[in-house]
Amino acid sequence: MSLKAQWQAWADKIAALSQRERILILLTGLVLICAGAIYGWLDGAALRLAQDRVALTTAQRDLEIMDLENLGKQARLARDPDQSVREQLVRVEGDIDRLDAELKAQTVDLIQAHEMPAVLEALLSRSTNLHMLALTSLAPQPLMAGDQRINLFKHGIRLKLEGGYFDVYQYLKALEALPRHFYWKQFDYQVQEHPKAVVEMEIYTLSTSKEFIRG
Image (tube, rainbow, N blue to C red; front, side, top):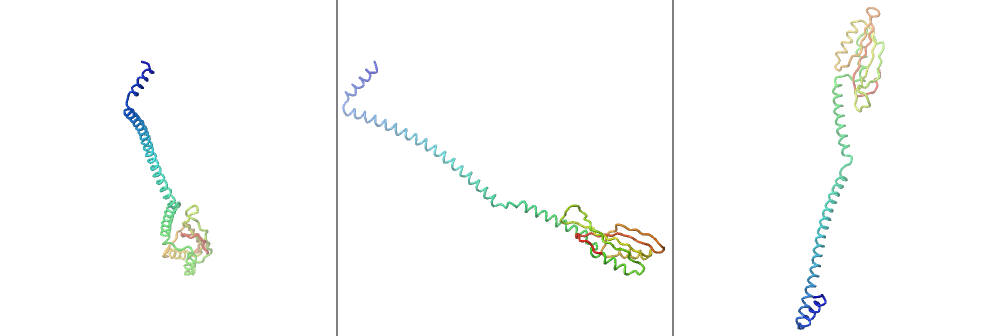
């Protein structure tokens, strides 16, 4: 049977139906059409809802990341940019104070540099047969090279005396008996006309001061 014949047969069947039956068929068709439309709309709405939920989850994650980044930036801004430098400076100052204390401990029993000329002359005044020919202050010399904040300086004095052996001996013995000491660097004893001799010696002390000794 051809398509035209089938269509004609179906139309004849519809025409043979009562008006009530035709209305029911029409309503059934409308219901099916509406149900399909509603189903299609609900399916699209469910897809859009799922997409919106994914977008919302992504937005929330991005917001959390932004919050963490802002907290990190605020923490960096609140942190003192010079904190590491300050801590290093504190350590360096502590090392300097410790070194300063050690240097002062090494010089506690030494005679003060500015006291040396007066002490040498005072001891010499006790002897009537010993005479000072020269007393020269030497330029201070740093013990540590470089521009150090704390350093030890060697303050020296070159002394030239004339007198007899016993007088020189008593003078040296008095120097050694001083409550504060110094270092010997040079000692030269020469008899020029017996019993007189000329003594040249160089002594020095240590100090954290680099000021020149005035003889």
